[in-house]
Length: 335
Ligand code: GCU
Image (cartoon, rainbow, N blue to C red; front, side, top):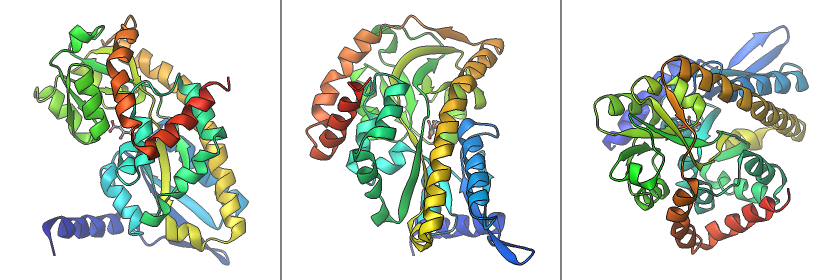
């Protein structure tokens, strides 16, 4: 047995102890408890949306199901919680795109900088494109199912200094999530990507391992990164989704009625999350400003876009990426 697998078993035992046995006796019927892992803080739009989804699913199934959300990376970093979902240790997790794209190339498309025109375009794609269901179904062979997409807003760079131009970025080490596409993106922009998991970023900035990072307003604020990297520059380089995933065997075992109830609950939850997101981002921005951060709006976006254009050409050589890329572009014109 290799070391990695042993440590996975140890973490799984810990998670099992934490999440409990998964069924509650109430009156004459059993309520099944589905545990959901999230790296986000209490009150984050995604956690709120999953709670609401649990309530709706519970109602539609006469209380036969209940969701329990574990926030704050309590069950581990996203990569580990994806494995927990695959092995059926937990039922669901909220997942960043890079963890999914490492299984299926089509998802790499969403990691292209400046892919979507804006967040509304991303939403239009995920709610109207016939390709989405087909793409989502490709992860089922790895025993996880994508139940819904969630918006994760727009990602912007932050550091100890403002970033307005390519010259400002020259030679900077920026933490990104673990993805080759992000490494290529940072290189094209003149900096260097330092990949690491979400929970490691604060110390990395503090100790100078990286010069900065990039994320949406919610994560910049909730992690308190603004205290050590107080310039938040609207580089708007990525609009990359998150997903709610679940164990595929569990999904397949549901009756058709329960599947339909789950899908309806997921649809309502995705709408709710988008609705919460905008307000949350504005509140978070006010919070970081109050905490001493400076928000920089006058970024030379044209120069950034031009610098990464060759990356679009390179990535779309891959037919699986090209298929999704073309479908995304079609929904740009549907305004
Ligand atoms: C955001 C995003 C997560 C992602 C994280 C990160 O919080 O919603 O899915 O993992 O950023 O940068 O690691």
